[in-house]
Length: 232
Image 1 (spheres, one colour):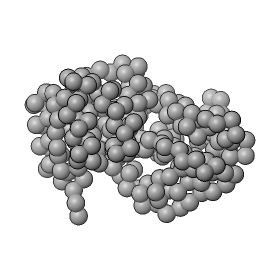
Image 2 (tube, helix red, strand yellow; image 1 turned 135 degrees about the vertical axis):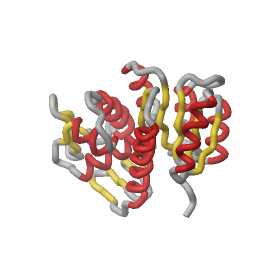
Image 3 (cartoon, helix red, strand yellow; image 1 turned 60 degrees about the vertical axis):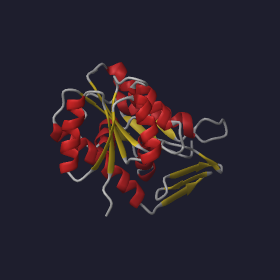
């Protein structure tokens, strides 16, 4: 069985060495880059399963790298965990809006980092292993291929956006709280970060409800959470 490949992007050599050592010992194949330009190039060439991406890197910063790989069909499905010394909420939100799957602030423990990596990779496998298809009112979702079509138009979603749509669809008609979505999608304790859900829901809506003819699929239940309702 081939090893899952992780691209570590950081310009601090001691951090790259520490992360690479622990990832290798955990069974991952590790490749590295110390600037944003190389990170984009290597991502296209190597197609890693996941990228650990520091924000403050030369060439292109982490935000620009994330934006670049998300806008490239060859790399858009690579999972991204951002690593940074910045902890401000606006930095987190911007990273998530650009398509990052997770965000961890330095200093962090290797145990926590490995847990975050396993959670993201486990979600990818779960999505890829599903064989269900949902079809209703012009909506077609193939959970196996992670394809979404609305009135025959393919909608490109990030991993997190697809996972949110998937859990809402599979629990259609039920109200899912923000806390439930955090727990099920992010896979670990994310206390006080329900804003993360709102950011991803907003971007998901822009994509699946962008045309006037498209049904309004996701209801906001004020003060509680969200519900999938294709009959709106």
